[in-house]
Image 1: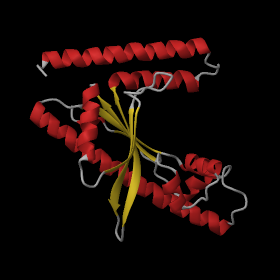
Image 2 (image 1 turned 120 degrees about the vertical axis):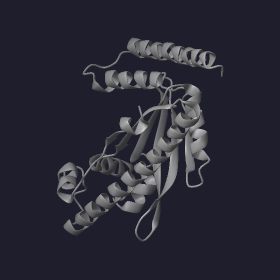
Image 3 (image 1 turned 180 degrees about the vertical axis):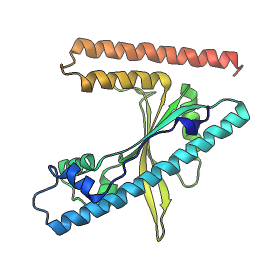
Length: 237
């Protein structure tokens, strides 16, 4: 199956009325109606810009995956997911950080407004995709955090990248940050269930359960490595 058929996008199509409803309980009370209107208009522009950046990176990843399929008869990317942070989340973060609600401040302060999750079959493929993406002239890696080689204390594993990608508009070019999380299917399986247990449960997760979740992460990581070794042996790699 082609990767583009598996793209899961949570696009946010907004207008000013929707943003007003989304942020009316968060927006600072001292702003004038004129200031609020200006901020909402900038929010619409920003959403369009970050959505464009997501499409730019997604297209690059799809092209790399298709090339692998042609050359090696194997697609390293199982599927892609993308998300755009909601206006209420953006405003909440800026207010919490004590930052002004303006376009330039938002781009400098928040690097996770646009996000793409890349789910690969095997661990080695994560680093292959990272290396090929970093070689592209218009992609700049701003920050790299490797939770695969250095897992979080709870057992979480993933490769996190903050990259900058140019978005060509009608009158200018904007360099937009995009957060990329790269995981194997096994890592994503654990992270999804751990998130569901930790954040969706009505009860506090005990230390014993924390330890059990970490043990599950270790077991799944071992299976991940073993499956990769089996794949390599079968394909003489």
